[in-house]
Length: 98
Image (cartoon, rainbow, N blue to C red; front, side, top):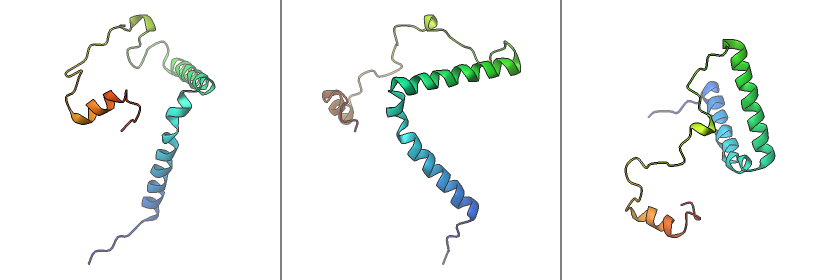
């Protein structure tokens, strides 16, 4: 007979993951509010400045401006799946969210 032994570390990690998941569940709704969005934008600017302070003007990854983005997004593969679940969501204008 095997026994499940929960270690203190395992318990703490599991609890932290559960709490993180619960915290992230509300992020989508929060990100839609203008005040929260402005705080996120401020945090992003502060992060960028901190990065520039530490490593100079060298970017860690290629950075694009809004002008670099294409107004046309070409689908990679199927743009209209034939699957029944997708068709039901499409008919409902994705309001149910499955």
